[in-house]
Length: 136
Image (cartoon, rainbow, N blue to C red; front, top):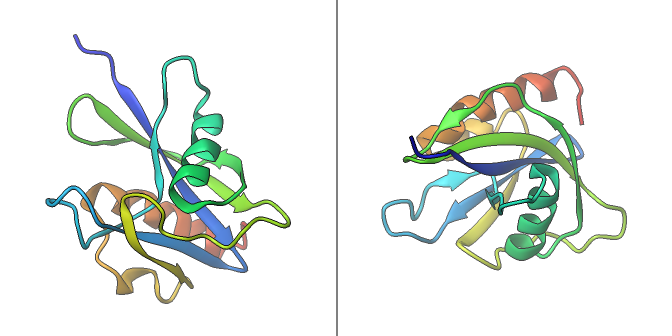
């Protein structure tokens, strides 16, 4: 049996808003929105991978927080896990540096205004519930 490869997604929160990133590649995902993140490398902690991926993809310094309950299947052998995250004080503003062409900060009322990738929808639902409860 093939071992699962974990992909970490960041529910990056700031001022009661969630950051959404629009994919520019690969073609089958382009134009859809996701929580930014990427693969956990062998021997890397998921929280460290999340911080590294946000630096590479968005040019920001962030802190990984608690894991959002759940795990969502991507194409084999990948599985998605999501962590809450926040920008470190003094971090640059996020910019779409890699694999994305647009970023949006969404309030809870705007979260469903974008077309999320199917695998991100359950995680986004969990995050919106946490946002409604005042978690940041």
